[in-house]
Image 1 (cartoon, rainbow, N blue to C red):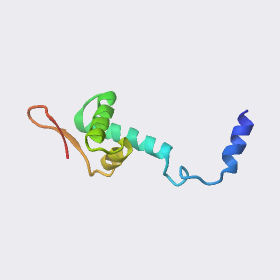
Image 2 (image 1 turned 90 degrees about the vertical axis):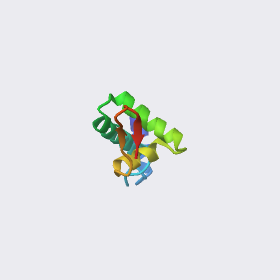
Image 3 (image 1 turned 60 degrees about the horizontal axis):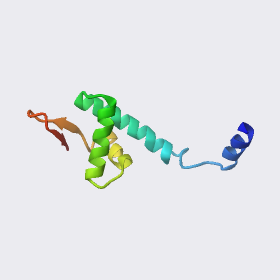
Image 4 (image 1 turned 135 degrees about the vertical axis):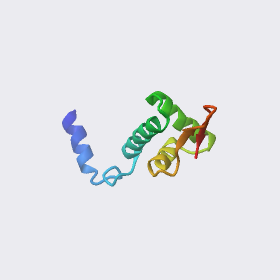
Length: 88
């Protein structure tokens, strides 16, 4: 079974994942963005991922797109003096 799967994967040739695109690259970017939100907010990983998801939902975009904005430093998460969350 493993040989069949390996042969099928190798037969496909270069894929979008090889070029840094596709579902695996997006998943890695979501993990990286989660870590960045952890550092920005000082929250647990689960909470940081929830913030990314909430921002994506409220702005009608994918979590991958939101993560890309965070990694590119176009989106940051902060809290004001009243502990209200903000994303800029």
